[in-house]
Length: 231
Image 1 (tube, helix red, strand yellow):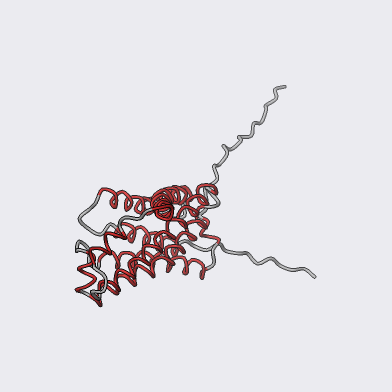
Image 2 (tube, one colour):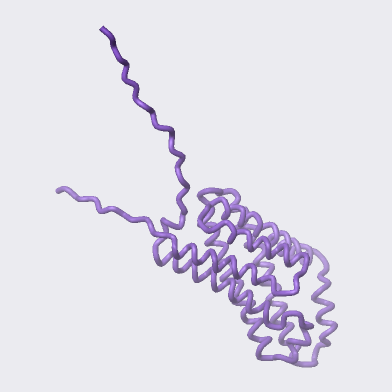
């Protein structure tokens, strides 16, 4: 009498696919995030385009209305950029919590420095409309900060913004919440700003943020199954 041994094939373990954290957001949350991303990119780009390649103080003095719109767009961009930092943090904190938080904190310091620059820009716009203060002297003074306040400002702005955006985008890259190429564009902006390019480098940021916004809106929400309640 012969016996046969039945063998059951054991399926290979299936690697779990990382689900985008955006799927857990409400429709209002996804819409708000998309608006924040697009608004920050558009405002920053508009401010950069207006008067691009011109002598700054001369342009402020000779194009009062248009230059005023540019300065205003730059001011309004800051709170929306802070909102974008919050969006990136929410995207990335599950996959890379340390990187997401470090990047967000550094960017808050960097954008605080950016807000300080906008304060100087506003004063510069006012100075450019009259002749009470010599324009050349004003530019020279604001370009040569001294003492501890100047050192702290430089550290906050340059280290916070430059290092913060790289770390934050690495975290966003790892989250897979948006196309990875979209996360590369803000870093490409930093490189373009450093080396200098013959076009507004903020176009790269705008493209990346709009791309992210489209991805956020198109991400399907998580469906919730109804659970019957028994008396």
